[in-house]
Amino acid sequence: MSLSAEKIPKEDEMTIGGRLSDEMDFGCEYSANLPKIFQSLNISLAFTSYQAGRLMLVRSDSESLDVNFKSFVRPMGLTATENGFTLGVYTQVIQFHREDGLINKLKMPLQRIEDDVTAKKVAATPEEQISLNVGKGFSDEDNKKIKEEKEAFDEYQNKLYEPVDSRVDACFIVRSSHYTGMINIHDIEWGDEGLWVVNSSFSCVSTLDPNYSFVPRWKPPFISDLAPEDRCHLNGMTLKDGKPAFVTTFSKFDTPNKWRKNTVFDGTLIDVSSNEIVVDGLAMPHSPRWHNGKVYYCNSGLGQLCCYDPNTRVNRVLAEVQGFTRGIDFVGNILILGLSKVRESTVEKPAPLSEKYAETFSGIWLFNLADNTEIGHVKFTGNVDQIYDVAVIPNCTFPEVIEANHPRVRNHFCFPSLQPI
Image (spheres, rainbow, N blue to C red):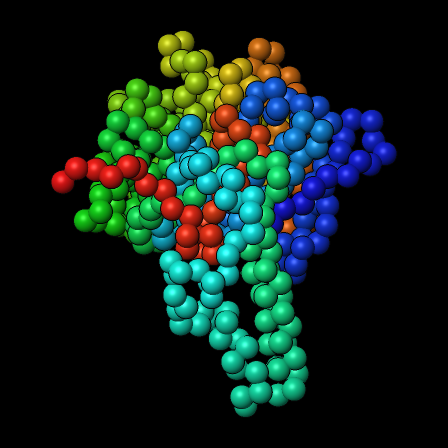
């Protein structure tokens, strides 16, 4: 589903807004220059909101922005290439492949399964089973609620059979999934040995193998052994030359979940190759990213965007914003930064942002790295409070995503020519 934009009486901002359901109620304001910037760069943006349970796409037609969303259970780490993108969720890592050959088919109504010779009718889904339960031992009030749910589901399903937006210029369709179990996956990135993932539950960096939930490859020097105890809250990772280079942690603890009870900020930026803590005393750091010979990262609890130069060992604050910084990506000399609202948490010492600002924002901010000035922003209201990761989707401005439970997966095929035996 998506929301489109309307002009509002502000000189430099536009807005998206509306209530789609009880589960997804949000609005959005954005700088008026962003649609043309996205068009000129030929990009769109994707970001994850674990709190809203959504992967969200920010798309442009040069005149306005469109925000499209797909439902997932606790979407977190996100990484994109020209060929597709990969998403870490509650117990899985899901890969979406770019298949632009399907675009024309997406722009036509989807044939109903009853009329499709390639797919036979299957057993009723749990949602379809709702209609079969009406009247079976339920009160009138319960039956009314069941019927309302059925009607809402039917309306949603019917929309999935409709043609997609005519502006769509790229198609990403689900291709594979690896089940990791609940490892509290955070940052993910492709490297020389496949996909690297931050396994926060086991306080390690891992790769994936179809024979295992995960393959542990590195742990911080202060972690004594591997156990699903989230000892230091290892969360961020960046690669250099195809291998993990820097990570972030909330603490140096080697005790189950003790970082939540910490009364001082003791977050770290660690050089993986040397096991050296190069920056410490950080407030809830996230999202280290290697770019042009430096490590950009978020000192999230202070709302800071920072940069560490490993050659000079100089650490700088590039910008301070009115939100919990988390999620970084780049396009050329532009840095894309995610912001979240300060939320209620079980940690002993809350983010200092809650004391510094009466209000914090959720959204995406763009900065020019030439002078660290803001280029523009997208600001969310409603129930999109928490953004975890952001990714640039290259070479398209209006992508569409076909997830695993979408009815188009049934007969939207992608395959090479006949191969020899």
